[in-house]
Length: 325
Image (cartoon, rainbow, N blue to C red):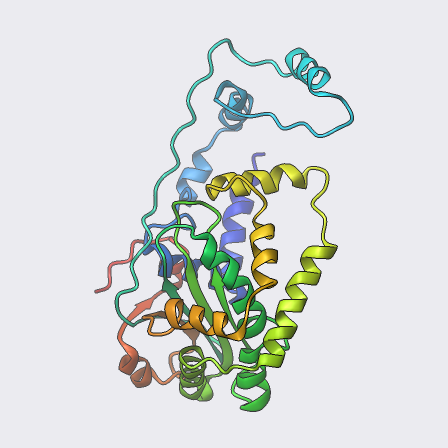
């Protein structure tokens, strides 16, 4: 326990040197700004000031707060309740759970660029755009088809067009992400990894294909069939029953959302997918997250997209306040 703060700080230092570790905090910055769940950490000084006895006391005190107990097993509800009453000792009066800190999601009202200087030959670009403010089941359902057909996997339109046909990237994908909680927003995210000198062409190609989605009725039919088969052959069992129930409840649902997806796929047409793209994807503004070496990336091109904010690794990982204009 005494070495844990030192090891934790060492781990934070190490991750700053690894390119893949920069993607998550950069995406968090695009979604929330400088104050985010990712940066909401103890400082090294605060970590080193922690006392083992205080941490142990916090762990022991967890059951003193409002909580739920989930049981999965062969006993009936009365047997399980008796077992919990006997062994799960709690105070007579439970304390309310401390409210989670609320980090407001930023609006994406105009195109802007967030650039992180990192020593690398390639350039990695992520486009992030906030959509509908709260969970919407119709969007969730159609996003399953949109993602399967258009944005994810080696056979997707995006991968085949940008990587295979144009050879502009070593990796490319687009995802329409739905929230896990009812009060959170939907997001459109796109990623392209390319050589630094190909970055302008790769970004333009991604912009074009997102705005004007190619339509292949054969591939849409294959995507629909793939979704149907996945649902038909998958089973939610054991403790996953509870976790899926909890996810549905957090989204404001009282049933398994896969039923909505399956029923919709049975009647979906290419026109439905095109309508979804026109309504929820076309014409968006984006925050462009760019990770690359400043002496290799065309900064003038990035400035042509929109306002450019340069972040240091300290700022990305929340180890100093963002103070640049």
